[in-house]
Figure 1 (cartoon, rainbow, N blue to C red):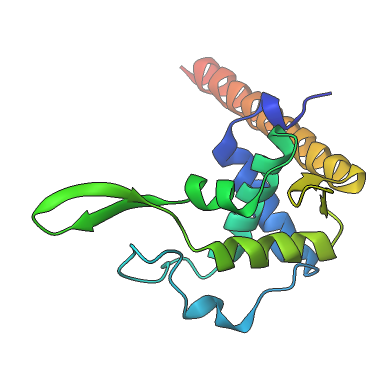
Figure 2: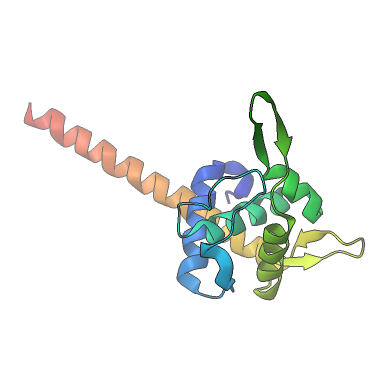
Length: 158
């Protein structure tokens, strides 16, 4: 059975984000349309569903590692701080955004806190993520089979 490690990150994150949005269980704060994701950003995200995408990325990141703290997530989702005519440096993302995402994922049972203050994936969360990964692999196989059938039909017509 394929797991989260077996598929590409972007395919899994897109599938899990759409699953989170469809389920409607993830509690989205009211400020998501106003907030920047880091102090180094100039604008808020253009994607109205960016909170679901970030939640899916956080869930995948914590799935792949044992326990992860908020500081590690801020470093992961940080970026380039443009400092005018001086050289750019790395800047961390907003810790509040990462914390609220982790709290939202904890409420739906995907994450759980460890005794040292980090977060880890729960049993239900692991099962959920593996199920989504399997569905992504099966959908890719179906797409490939359809493309092969179309190619065979195109060759027969010639």
